[in-house]
Length: 272
Image (tube, rainbow, N blue to C red; front, side, top):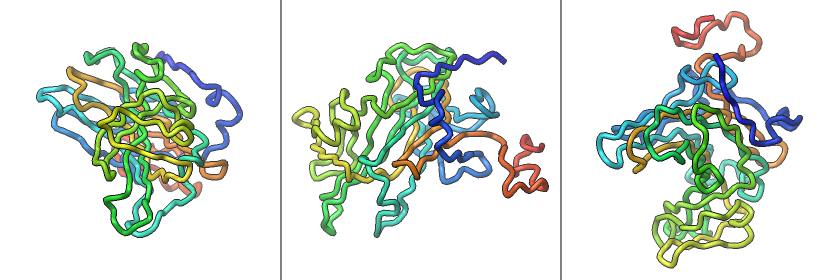
């Protein structure tokens, strides 16, 4: 099968690709990843329809019957405790690499710039016992704000997001929730330049010490019409010793502990 892959970052073709730990995410062993926010006119699953490097990828599909019901996300939250920060070294200032791959199928009829969206969950503790003075939300990468207003269809894009633009959606803050309408700021800008949105938007003050608590890939919510697309190879790194690439596959390719007796992973189509 012919497959077009656009390598748009030197990271993917340099020796630095060997630095990360690869984790296979499969239906039988999702490694903490899960589908969330899946509404009536959308779905997300790992399947074999459009594999990238192995036998699978993460598929998103929407077919709008009711406005606003075209949403599906797939996420990993590594922050689980309500008492302490589980990974205090995973901060915005320590982010050292961000990558993922996405694909938009030409069967899609929604607006041309829509593709799977990359989000980082963030959290800032105001230092009191009152949660209402804390700030939480998403740092969001979208193609339209990063020169992908009309991307090629039926092609994989393998992207380095580290120096790209992110906007912010606040889910919790003293000013309430909502979008911070500033779409041209990099992660470094959010740390050092304190960008803000429109006067009515929530105010944020992200710093190098802002905690990153998870990662999310998603589509939809108000896109309109239909969308079919895929995502894969999600990489998030903090410094040099905490660097993971999540590879979405249908069948497990790594044999645990080199055990030849492990021949399948609880799925009929994964018998070896």
